[in-house]
Every structure is written in C-alpha cells, then in structure tokens.
Length: 143
Image (cartoon, rainbow, N blue to C red; front, side, top):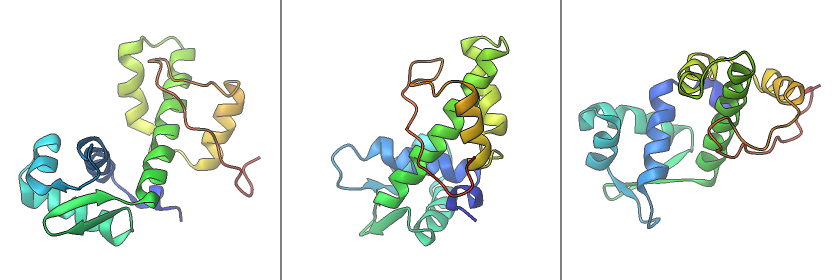
C-alpha cells in the first residue's frame, strides 16, 4: 500500500502546512502548524506523529521539517487532486467548484486510476486554476 493511501485528509493538510510554513527550511513550530490548520496544538501533534512515523516529516527541538519522501508524497497528492479537478472541469463545473469536488475524491483515487484519467485528459500541464500538475512516474501496472 502506498503511503498516500494510508493518510487522511487532515494528515495531508498538516503535511502541506509544514511545507508552506517552512520557507527558511529551518523547521516550523507546532503552534504555527496548528494555526494554519485552525486546530489546537495537541490535534496538530497527532497528525504530525503519523507523518513522522511514515517518514514524511522530521521533528527536532520543537521544529518540524519535511523530508524528501514527504515532498514526494505531497507532489503525488497534488497530482491526484489536480487531475481530479481537470475531470470535473471537463464535465462543466465552474473553477470555483472543481477544487471542492476534487477534495471529495482525490484521496480515494488509486495511482492507476489517476494515470488513466491523466491520459484521457491528454496529460494536461496544469489544473483549471493554472497550478502545474506534477509529472507522472512510470509505475508497474499503470496501464
């Protein structure tokens, strides 16, 4: 099972909060992550503990930083989300609606399904909002 398939929406949001807040690559405080997630620090810590166990973040001296594996996982999630946005744009949802609709299904999509959708969409370089879609990686059985 891929690591992305084991994560919850809130854990993905916590990973994204670490990446977004760690602009100096020195690590992010628990309070800052909790603030970005709009939760109390103990709730944020629960999510970070799972991410650390999966090797996606590293915690040291009260600061959390993302690992290379964490960056790769977040890029894969963004690929799932943005390909799903493209699908919803094709069926006529507005730009405002596509993100919300994609969040309903992006974590449920398998890598294989995402690759098939990507091919069906003609390998789009960006989502309907203009954000780049990370390139696919060749995976066994992704036909």
